[in-house]
Length: 243
Image (cartoon, rainbow, N blue to C red):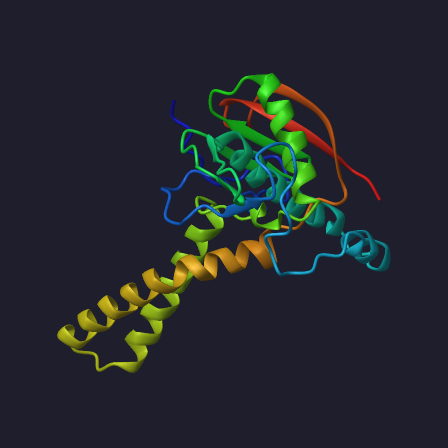
């Protein structure tokens, strides 16, 4: 099933913030360490401190800014989308008696997602009962310390960062080096290589600090089967904002 998604203009003025999970897998999935083989959530896998009331306080202080609530909500939806894909993709847990159990998350590349300020679309063949459980579990795990679930290696943010970095380095090299063909070609090659090395880490940083936020203020409203603005059928997970 083709789950390819591109960010195009739609009915919402915030469509430029939409992100999808359709790029080839280029990074490692996060690992979650659990204390037992069954049932318990893992301890925090991130050293970053997240304040549960941060977005709500920001919205109260800057409520006069048009669209701020939608942007804050979209960042949280984006994180929930990523976490849901991770939860659905989990395939195995390796438990060793007498030692710490480790759960390795495996990415299912047949699943894709697209976030909006009202919820997110999930593309791919998924049982709706499994999806309901996955969304609920993803929200619970995100808000209880598993913040690495908010970052995904196939997110469109990574591609955007790579394109911007490549373009910036290419322009810089073009201005710095002599305007001779050989020097320019060598410079472009170095720019592309440098961008390829730096963009994965910068893309993950952009996701963590810019395009996602822990969904402390999201409440799952319902899950329905519907078509997106381009006519593709998908599950839509609708969420609402709560203080």
